[in-house]
Length: 226
Ligand code: ADP
Ligand code: ADP
Image (tube, rainbow, N blue to C red; front, side, top):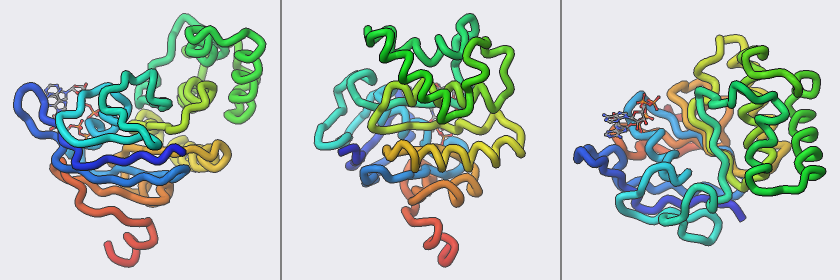
């Protein structure tokens, strides 16, 4: 099971700034939850704590049945997709997607199978031998997703993954990510400041403001009672 439970999560940065205050979020297995709110409200900090990239000051974080507060990112069964893609420029698309599995000493034939399957899902089969600089923005974003997919994580974390794309591509990728969620059948936690993204993609939307959760609702509930 890959439900994610945040209980009274707080983050105080070293300079004393309280970025996240007593946040409670109960994310169900296979759910697509969007954290939305204005810049600086604590969305990224919350996501980075789930990923293990930022220490939790207080509170309890569970993934599945395990308290993971003190687990390093690699032991959390999560994958994170960033807004700047962070692709390796000197590696081909194939090698970018294979890299994490090579590090984990996965046998070559299994790596090949997983990379090709991810490439198929993402429509990258024809560009596997290219390097990132020879890709379009949308293709780069798909490679970033592909690198996560091959690891078969239980939970996908995405921090504004579409914000570097132009409006048309953003709309297209919204649909693709929603489809990907259905296809993979895993839990997605998605951060954005874009309300349209939140309303069109989320099964449930967590609205944050000034480090607290202001509201948690389905898109339907938000339409009826904004
Ligand atoms: P969001 O993702 O909603 O834009 P963030 O989680 O990135 O918000 O940041 C929340 C608040 O915490 C902001 O005011 C930001 O400036 C502050 N902040 C983020 N990182 C640090 C840090 N390392 N040290 C101090 N303050 C930080
Ligand atoms: P985002 O795109 O999520 O808003 P930012 O541009 O706010 O990210 O932050 C980029 C980096 O700088 C992050 O690693 C964040 O933790 C750090 N950071 C943000 N605000 C502060 C701050 N007030 N003091 C120190 N580090 C910060």
